[in-house]
Image (cartoon, rainbow, N blue to C red):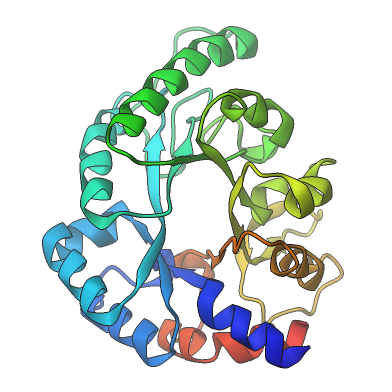
Length: 285
């Protein structure tokens, strides 16, 4: 079975550029991905801008690397970030990702902690009204993406980040928004590990577009506060990562799995993480 897992990893494993330091050459990231014989990457907008979208496209084509996701569009509640949607979609048109990640933005803007432009003089939080308004914005963005032949991946956001990240927080609520179109859901285990629909959705739903995964860092009160690499499975709150990865490997539609941690989550050389990553996953399976 491990040989089969190894073959699947060769084709379906992706690593997101979020872990790569902004002050380190983006060419080195692509070089390291290629050296590790990883055929897919996820990209975020700072990395794309730092590299240059056309040069990045050339480098990816040269190394035969597929893009699983571009992060992110949406953030409809934020006074700055939603204005970047058109630019991100145009970059995606060039880079041709499997999915463009869509995150709604928090009740008080987002993303946290970068965005601090939002201020409110209203002490009443109208979650339902905001979700109704955002639903219409999502439909419009779906239509815009479809005109560019792009598929969006709407990501449910953990409810503990409702203020500054996203205000659609469950698989079920997001599924309603994609059920009548060709767009999908991106499931990030960090945000959805508590969702009662998670296991069934990962195993069976045709609306799954991508699984993003990592281990989770919890604070002293067992609240999720960040992501951890998978070689640090040494606390009582570890996710059962092998179960979720096997769900995806047992599907027939070749869904990708994308490792997503941020630079702030990494305490070791990200190059070594990438080079050793396949073997670390195989230890779990």
